[in-house]
Image 1: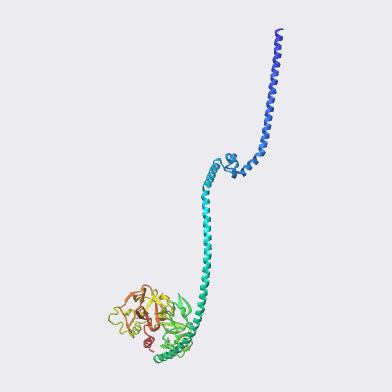
Image 2: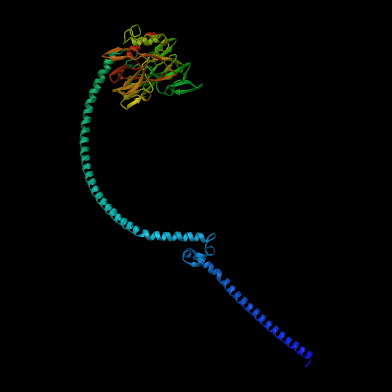
Length: 483
């Protein structure tokens, strides 16, 4: 063969070989593509299966997260997938370690807890036993109490019978004593009638310048005019041109005869001005005796010693606020009280028109022993008793200027006496030296009047606010007013 033929054959053989190789490669490529497609399809199917299964799986795991967070491997490794939002592996691990420690602690503490429970059970049994014992004791107590009540009732019934018998005897003795009391009362009034025939009607045994409770008074208070009852007047009120310095509250004795004069209920012995002269109400032709049942009567102390009440001029309680009048009252029981001797080295002329500063009284905060106990002077009431003597009059007033001050201590009850105090000793009246002081501002005082005229405190006795008895005061007043 020639060279060309050989070459051609080689080319043909090469082409065939190349074609065969190309076919084999194409076949292999096709197989690979088919494999890839099959793998993709399988993976897609698996992914679809996983996509359909995974949400339910995750949901189930999340639902069981509280129970499996420390026991399931997947849950422990991926708590961020199966746990609540914000859960991390570190947080879940810390929780699990803490839970494991708590479980270990519980296992260790259980025996102790069991022992405590047993002790509690024993204590409950003891408490139950104590309750049963208490019930038994209460039952015994109730039985004893019932028996005691029965005995008490029997004693009470016996007491009632004895009390009834006592009341019968008490009524009997009361009637007997009432007879004697009436007898002595008749004798007393008979003696008073013989010894106390004054210029007034028989029966006017008690000297009081006073007004009945229904009396209306025209006053000026804080520049405001008003009409009030006599018991509603206050210190500082103006009655006409007179300032009220003191309020007198007095217990009405049944022998204190009251009159109706000029529309005012007033005591028969009160002084009233008539045509330029002073007369006692019971002597005035226009005065009419009335029945007065009130327990209290009232009067005032004024700066000018006079009061215009319902267009009639009356004296105030003191009758006259002059030193001369006061000196006459004191001189009736003490000889030359203000002349020489060791009594006073002071100038008494300053009290010429201010004798109220000399009347004996207590400061408001002084302590006084009464039947109600220890009270301050401002809290005294009519009817209280000082050493068994009834308080029959109280004068609440203010002082300015100078007065005499005496401090006292009566069984650790402190107080201050104002004015000149006259002491009674063995039936004799004495005036010891007392200290004169200036008053800063106004000094609130309480004048006290008691039965018998002597205030007895501890081991000492002093005259009350009225100083002298009614008969002595009547004589001074009659001389003063020309009656």
